[in-house]
Length: 428
Image 1: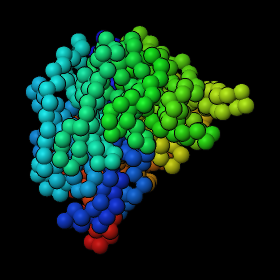
Image 2 (image 1 turned 180 degrees about the vertical axis):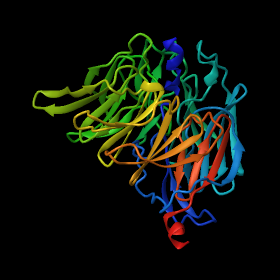
Image 3 (image 1 turned 90 degrees about the horizontal axis):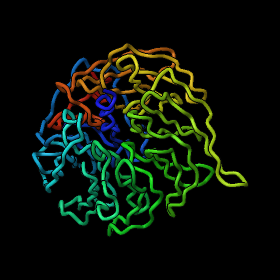
Image 4 (image 1 turned 45 degrees about the horizontal axis):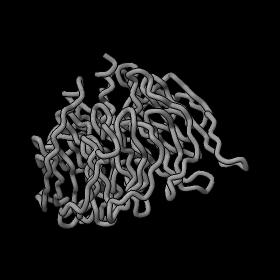
């Protein structure tokens, strides 16, 4: 059934690490990765320097059993934060980045009945947590937003708007990832039929503003600036919308409703003023929002149907869009975001899902089967530079790229893998 195939929207996808430091064996590196797609929510790891030669295999440094779920790890101050499920509880872990040793962990009851057909994906959590101002923000599978003290693990406040919305999560559970902007935590709460994009005060959990009444999709919002206006762009169950971040004012929208069982699951990308949005069986669409003398307008620039984004979010690298189409039983592709031309497609049957890291000269693509492909960020054609084995499978959670390695979450463990730095390879 299409409904079962659509379940993969839970991996709304990829989070990676910006790294500053030596990458020495003592792991004396200052890593900051604060949430879904990183501090800028674009998946770009500018400071990473690829090794002169990619290795044929990686060495596992440590592995910790943390529980199930598809959330990305967060990294800051030499610590790793991982949100996961163990039994009927959701657990927030704080681990030492260098050793994997537990610094603290806190759990809370999170009973949940998964929608029919979604059993193999488990009960989450599917949302990627966020880190800001020494707080970790988690969204449970049932739509419960919690704020935690990053130092001690104390839960500071929580809310789910159960008194406002009859359903506090979409059919297969909440997978949108909290967005933090200037002291506000922004989440689309609610179910398939009714919901709202809501900003809360990060300190208190009090509502700052609430916008719209549309149902919550499985995609995550992004924060961009268009014509000098700082705004949130998100895909809900009905439309692609732009909302002013400070006030919550609705600026523009473009209809993009869920079609039968083809779910709205993909986080939009943004490049040179264009909002790039994919949908299951609906190709990829480029929109150009503009502020005119008569107010905001939004027009489609192009729409192509050769490749389509089901649940995997695409990334920009060197002015090109790299993604994973669910056509052909799963194929990597490269697309020109200026005109929508598909420049190349990789082999068929790559997997069910891929999450991406974008680094200078390369795109790293982690498939759900535990393989990490390093591909050249080149429009000339598909070129696989390396293929690395990082898990036995079930790698639906976005990885984190460190200067000297990777953090990879599989079915129920989190592992750190070593990776030679550019300097260490040249010294050999």
